[in-house]
Figure: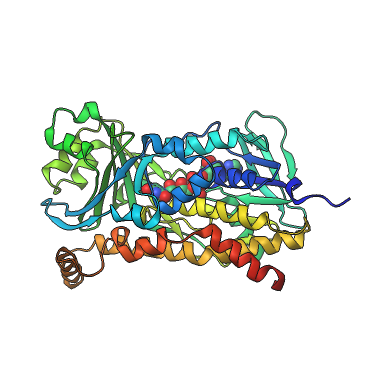
Length: 443
Ligand SMILES: Cc1cc2nc3c(=O)[nH]c(=O)nc-3n(C[C@H](O)[C@H](O)[C@H](O)COP(=O)(O)OP(=O)(O)OC[C@H]3O[C@@H](n4cnc5c(N)ncnc54)[C@H](O)[C@@H]3O)c2cc1C
């Protein structure tokens, strides 16, 4: 008897934003046998803010998990790009139009709230089973029956997991990507961006004695302070009880740090010295971070991959398109991947490996160019913001000045209306359904 496509076993490696969203999107698309394998013993998300752009929120809403996140998310109505040293405003962009244009306002939230809601959404689906503390080790086969070896941390014996589809959402250090490229005989490297980020969250209690800082927390503004080779982006999250700062600076502190973790405990005095020429308001905020609680992330990307798919295995999220945070789209793009996978896999006529591969190739076609364009745009935006003295910076500042007079593009691409149209105005699920209809029979 022919199996229904809903009975296919779909295994997901990694319970980050990409893995959780994939599991939920597939369950919502009707799949009944979804397994998620995660090395960590729980979600363990870093304390940090995340921007909830309309293209991301549209998907969360369709997956039925937006309402919980929205409750404590903060609506941003304006963005201000300022000189780090003087605090002088270079550009001011109104964000109110975003809701009217894209159906959702531009919001920001806590990563734990996004991850927690996705996870709770998954737990409500009987079809999703989690295997925490379990490493998906070697991929034994990519097709026709893909499989990998699972290694439980408990010390129990490793076992082989066979599936119809394997989705590897195993992050920027993806082992599946390495194995897929090895199989294809291709080398493509993780690229060192030379940049690192401090992620800082200040509570209302910590800020309450400083009226200027409380004004930031009570505002509805995202602020980007920029300077040579560095910037800081900041906004209130968690119902305005936390002020979130995320920085970018040269990663000089990583010389001695273990590269395997991509994070290091940094010293407060180093952080203060990196931003010692920034305005007093910024320095007062950095000074509020308790000694011993300064954590720094190394920012990495990857050269574009020749493919995201081999047989019945596909890469998802940072595994295939790690993105600098300067456009605030990394998680959003991982979640777009997930939504598109739900669309294409649910449309195949049967469970044959050939049709699974065709659907995954349509996923790649729907997603690769868009994600890689945004990877490059985020890098370009970083380069523009981090310019030092010279002609290029003069040109950039002319653009900022023109913008004040109401004309021209925003060098900080995140705040540019044309870029926002391209990112927020695109319905990836609709486009994928259309692409499937047009191309499946021809593949
Ligand atoms: C400073 C900073 C700020 C950012 N701000 C934003 C923002 O505002 N908006 C936005 O959209 N994005 C933002 N991003 C990007 C975003 O965080 C990432 O793009 C996103 O989290 C990637 O999700 P993922 O699921 O692909 O990978 P990950 O979150 O890395 O998840 C991978 C998971 O796979 C697990 N895993 C790995 N290997 C295995 C294995 N072999 N077996 C089992 N499990 C495995 C890992 O433990 C992990 O849980 C930011 C990033 C940084 C660094």
